[in-house]
Each structure stands twice: as structure tokens, then as C-alpha cells.
Length: 507
Image (tube, rainbow, N blue to C red; front, side):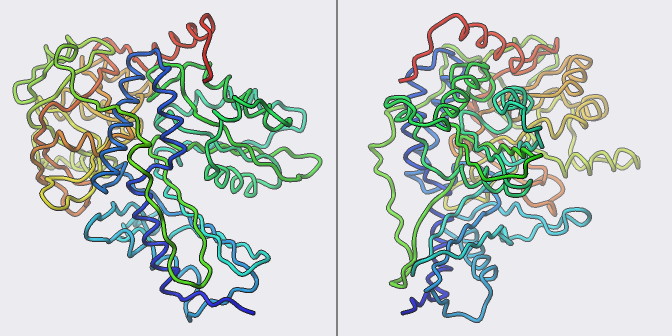
């Protein structure tokens, strides 16, 4: 006998699921991060973890996004062959309607990040559709649904290689992870797919990320097969690289490593690796014809009693309204600052438009002289918010614009997420500037430091517009100083050496 799934039940379940994962971390992630926080010995990494955990609790309580990048939606459907859908629409249309409804929810509007025409127009679809849909027919009379939202920070660090059959997976992973930088916001997890074909390996890597994080339990009971042995080996060796939370150097870079395999051609060894970030977002539910899915929120008791707050004794307070080049040049690598006053914002699209305007000799809509720019694309505000979650975006995307901004606009400092590449570091050193890092995965916490927000230029770019933020005690770390010293280089080197010398507890 067929089970009938009403179209409204699928649509509403996906919409509810999208809202749910925007503000609730999976419980397994919280538990593992809490354990990692307790044993972290690097002060910088521990502080970053404290911000992530505090942000997570705030999002759960306030039902606002964990990260400003609310992702592109991935939907995985396993449809029982006894199931019929009561609809005249395609599955893609049904899932897209669920995405649309979830992202446009007035109580918690999510940032639309999907662009139509990736090559040319790159026009925002305004509702985050279409989603990426995968469908599998299986035995049974239910619909198994997995949804995930993948932000650019982690998704863009995806790696693929067609290894020779005799090549070592471990060697490839250990060689590749340092090339990913820290824009994927560790501590997170790695999903690895091995075998099949190129696209199958990618799909397995993506799907493995939605498995429960169970490394703590695996380490406690010990491995029971070769695949579990390999997972533990990679977990320990990746962490021994010393990359640490946010790439600042520390004991924990990954909380788990997942590996999925599939038979492959005798001459092939396709390997894909995709990270999940500190704002990992996914949910799993079933539809059986009885109505929309019910998603039970985690208990607040699952969160550790970690409540990050500004440290006025340790951190230097900086007035952005009177900031000078001399003061910027005095900042030291790893120094923590609390920023107050007015800053500007701008991301890829704004920088490209500035570049075009400067090339044409056109005046810019704002004066950047002695100003600081924050690389951010915020979520729209609700209620009494001046701005929604506003965490930093990956700064390396702005590297190619850095010399231009420092030389031609009067800009004196920048704020973003994770490391800067050699082109940007050379420009920073040349102009005596500095780059400041805010914690990725703490977007709601960061937004609480923003007391005013208004658009000053390029309003048509939406979240990519130039805003002026008025901030109070916004926490940042000096990641690159005026001499070009980068903590994302020195920190991991220091902790890789320490990990080689000290026992690293796994529980």
C-alpha cells in the first residue's frame, strides 16, 4: 500500500529544518567542542573557542543565525519506493519552495547568498534558491531527509585529487590540509570520500559530514576495523599540525574525520575532502505521511558554562574615530584589541566596484582616509537589532585589492576572518598597515558589539554594500602587524613544535 506525502508537508519540513539548523548546532558538535575547549592549552585558540561556544548558546536562545553566511542548501532525499507525492510539482520545485519559505521567514530572515548565472551576471536570487538536490530510491514507505547549509568559507576549501592506487591517503591529507588556510573556521571536521568516480568521491565526502561526530567515543573504545584505525590516525596527525582554532595555533584543528568509500576502477583512486566549519549546520528527519516533521531542540544544559566577555585587563581599547597610522604601526602580533567607534564595511563586489571607479577616475561614495574596513556581509536585522549576525568573511578573497586600497584610498587597517596571503602581507608591510582578525563562527556575538549601522554606498549590492558600523568593544586579534608578521604562520609552527614534545590527551 502506498504512503501519500502531501506537498505541503515536505515544503514545511524543509522550511522548518532550515530555520532549525540556522540557530542550533548539532549536539554532538557542542559536546566535542566543549571537551576540546577544556583541554586546549593555547590561550588564543581557547579564547576563539570560548567565543564560538558563547555565540552558539546565544543563537540557540535568540533563534538567530550561528553565522552570517547562512549557506547554500543541500537536500538529500531517500525516497521509499512505496511512497507517492500528492503534488503536480517536481521535487526540485518542492524543495526550492521549502528553501524560499525558510529563508524569507520574517522572524529570522536568513542571508540570501545564492547567485544566478555564476559566470556573468551573478545576480542574487534573493531567496537562496535553487537548492542542491540529491535523490535516491530505496525500499520502504518513508522519505528520509537530510538537509545542510554549506557556507562559502568551508565549501570553498574543498579539495580533490586523482591519486595513483599506490599513493598514501594520509600523506595527501597531511600535505593538503595546511593549504586550506583557516577560512573554513576550525575546529570543525573533515569529510573524505575515496573511490567511485570523481563526482562520487565528492558526494561521499559531502554526505559523510552529516554523520554524528563520535571521535571521543571511538577513542574511548578503540578501533574495531581498518577504517576506524585510519580515522584515528588522521585525527591525531591533522591535530598534530598545530593549526588550531581559527588557525591561531593550538591542540585541536579537527573534532572528527569521516571517511566513506566505494569500489573504483583498478587504475584509479579518486579522493575528495570537504571540511565542515565551526558553524556546522545539518539536520535529519523522516516523513511517513502523518504530517510535517518534528524537530526537537536540544536542551540548553548541553552547552558548557562558557560565557565569553571582553577582557579589559588583557585587551587594548582602540578608538577608531581618532585612529592614526602611528598607532596602527605600534600593534603587536597576537595582541587583542577592543574596537570602538565607526568603521566601514566592504567585500568582493564592493572592492571590485572601487577598483573600476578608481580606474575611471570617478569619486568614491565614501572617504576611506584613516578608516578601518571590515570584510562582512551581514544578515538583515529583526526587532530592535541594528544589524543581524555580522561575522567576518574570509580575508584572502580581498588580497588582490589590498595594495590598491592602502595606496589609493587612505585606508589604514582591515578586519576579516583567518589568514592573509603573501600578496596582502607584502602590501601591509609596504604601507605600514595591519590586519585584524575576528572569530569566524561567532557572528551573533560579534553583532552585539555593533550599536549603529547604515548604508553609505553601493546600496544595490545588498549585503555587499558599504556600511558604516558604530561599534563598542568589538573583539579582534592583530593577525598581521606593520612588519608583516602573521600569527597564522607563527602560531601553528609554535604549536606543531609543542605538540611534538608534549603528551596530547585525547579524552
